[in-house]
Image (cartoon, rainbow, N blue to C red; front, side, top):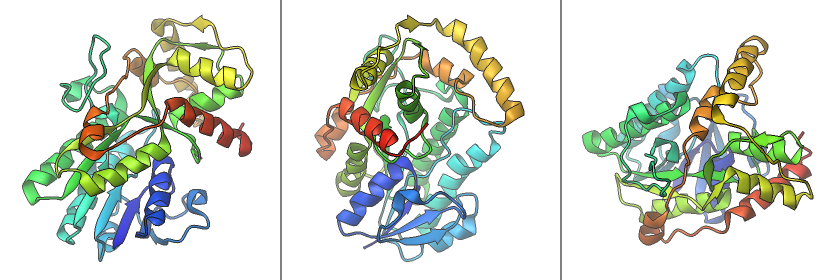
Length: 328
């Protein structure tokens, strides 16, 4: 069985890659020329260079493949020009899945995000059926992922694309080389750059559990359906407290109002537009934090047999990895 995976050099992608190799899949990875490939150094796989914005490279990549795991995405909460993000996340997803369907790929697992799901105003964990619209999406990342998922649903109906959708929550753990925005929170905390916080909540899950959920979706998921791959619902205060206690530090005690942080984030973005360095706080992330992002994985547990370890184990492994790799 030949399996194509996109985003194999990324955080979630590399976890899925390692699991697929361990399960005996003949894996080929689609990566951009010049991309950081540390996450699969030494692994047995075929590397194919291409780009989600280059339809011809996608057609070449899917040729002869039985299975596709489409995990790659442009995941940034700040960028000077959003056009490339939409080209990658929306147009690239549509082009890749169309090419894979035409090439006769038997099954496709598409990695969406809980960012595309609705949020319950009463704080109750959301699930796959919680109502949501495009207007509810805050920022270009969420909008692009929402639109991409809508394109996937269209392809399932219009050309019978054999796609199962997974919606990971907030993965943490090793090999977060970029790091992701959540990994940045962990890193900034252990490097004593988190003197205060805002009130919000996240669903924390170990990245290796998310990877296992991908494989379960491939094996047991129903075409056209989506499954939340999550872990534990935790407030940001609880997350920071755990990280600090783990490192023998005093947790931050200053809780800042969202409306106070917003203008600070706006100023940081203005500076970033000049320096071209990603700001530590973004307007998008502050607006997102106003919503408590708690989710339920009950459907995945019932239908797929999905399980997740305590979220704090993911935080533990993230801390160990950042320290071992001497991230600053």
